[in-house]
Length: 261
Ligand SMILES: [Zn+2]
Image (cartoon, rainbow, N blue to C red):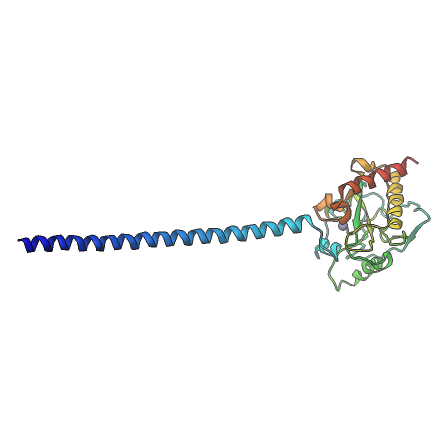
């Protein structure tokens, strides 16, 4: 009897031990699973953070090189609205400092389509430091071959010595400003380095040409009549004016001052 009791007690203890160790195993498994969940959560959070930071950096910062080519993206820009057009190749005598070197009419850089009414001048930077106005103009002309399958151009390009080349006549659509190609005039600007800042010669010509265009088309530079490519697509173009809001405001004031001279 006593033996039995002892055995029973013993059995009880043993089963208690077994039960404890089973519970411990379950508990430790639970802990392990919890740890794994925490690790997975931390990894996901890390990945999300990296993606977020990457988007933040690329969204805010400017990408160097071939900026305008990336903007074109090989897609045919929207020119549907231009069918409501003003007269094609409207005759406007350009200022004497403008060098008219119009592109050959071609699907990639001079589609030969008339614009609608003009509502703004769009300012750009070429995104290719140290290149000249002539090189950029000739690049647009080379696109006519279709080899690169890029659609890009500009009504004007201003160079590092302040020279101004007209590539697409006023009244015709140029491929520079995405969905605003049909109601805007585009000016691409050369720049010496990666900052995208225009040198003084380029800047002075840009103020003069933008002012002249504002006068021709009755645009108010400080009231939406002069915009950055950035306002159209959110693109970091022209880089320096996007990264330095105060310089952009100053530029608009300088155009305004030119108009009031
Ligand atoms: Zn641009």
